[in-house]
Length: 75
View (cartoon, rainbow, N blue to C red):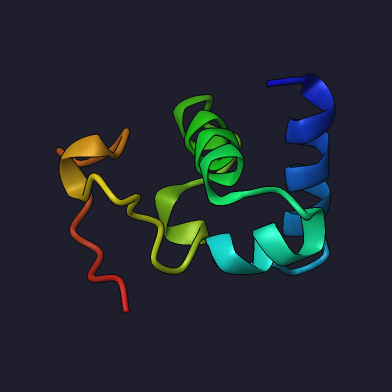
């Protein structure tokens, strides 16, 4: 994954994207790239899991960087 991919995801977030699907639409990336970028941004502390509606990946809460402390119920 390139830094350009992360930059494009950051740009999508700054334009108001609040779901992984919205990020995919704005960036043109597939689900796997968006998941990697979002998870990396969460792991690096640039965004919080609660910044992304439905932030949990297919792996569910056990795959989330903050699964021990998250009590947010995602819709």
